[in-house]
Image 1 (cartoon, rainbow, N blue to C red):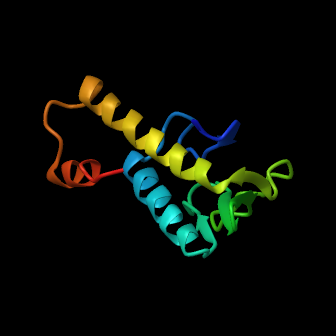
Image 2: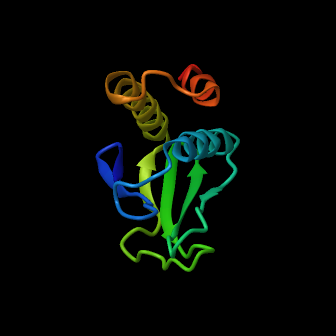
Length: 126
């Protein structure tokens, strides 16, 4: 799985393969990243799982820098993804697009009834 910020595709963490991710975790982690970065605080997304690397976000004014760094679970940094620069506004747009697309996917192909926790999480405004 990968996601797009602006014009760049960012490789994402997988647990048991590139298509096996915890969607609720992505929802919460990316929401937390945007909130921290809005306050100009760095944010590290680290699953601590199975040798995955971590993703470090840092903001300076209108720019966002993303680095794939060593993860607690043993993942190695990715040399081609150190301080990759994006527009700050593009992260918010990518998050809104992700949330919109996930909601659509759940409506079209999800279970007929979602657990209450998922309904609450996925009903928040974006």
